[in-house]
Each structure stands twice: as C-alpha cells, then as structure tokens.
Length: 166
Image (cartoon, rainbow, N blue to C red; front, side):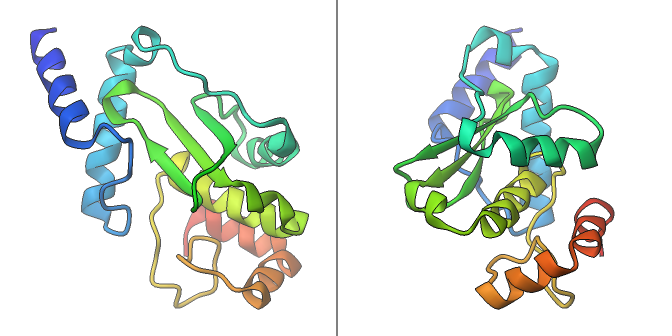
C-alpha cells in the first residue's frame, strides 16, 4: 500500500493533468495503460470518486460503439467542455479515463461526430494509438472531410479496421 501511495504521489506531481504523455508511440501508450490497469486493480477509481458520466448528446453513439464492442463502456466518461481539442485523457493510477470535446464538436454533422468519438474510444477503450495511415482508417491522426465521408460510406470496413486492426 505504501508503494502505491508513493507511485500515486509521483504520478500526481509529474503528470497530474491527466494528459496523455506520448500517445503516438506504442511504448508511451503501453506505459500509460499499465498505470491505468494498476489504478483499476488497486481500486483507486473507488477511492478517488470521479464523474464518468456520458454526455446525453453522444449517448446513442456510445451505445452503438458498445454494440460493436459487446460490452458496456462504463469506465470512460465523455464530456463536451471548453477544451480546444478532442482528447482521451488517461488518469492513470486513478483508474479512469475521460474523453473531452470542445463545444464546436456539436456543430459537426452527426457522422463526423461519430467518427471523432469512435477515434477517441479507439484510444480510451481499445488502447490503440495513431498509425501511419497508409490505409485510410479511423485511427489516422487527422482526417479531412473527404476522408471522413469515405469512412462513413464504407462503415463496415471502417469498423472492421477499428476493432481488428489493419
């Protein structure tokens, strides 16, 4: 228990903002996920109460993602906030994750909202990171409107690549 408290103190001092330190490399991403798993295993998400509510405006898209996943996404919150970018925030040793979106996210067409949400769920739930995009897929770091339209038109393939990899 003492070691866990020391690690928690270190984590809160070194990266307490919850920002993903290096989501574009598998090494950094794997380390973040190990911290997250340690926090869940230790039950830290019960000690440090948090709000993992899902914004009602995206609930239907979360339910669609859950239908593909085959289980509930109860350990990830989704919020529309004043942040300037969309992000999966990994609160490591605290044992929870939250996706945040800027308010202008709601101005996007519903299909584009879904692609951006599924992209962040790819990070938070499926533990994927950005890839080289040699094949158009939802985990590309930046997608323009034409690319998002292509992903929506071939939704079965988009979902297959998301859940089964390239």
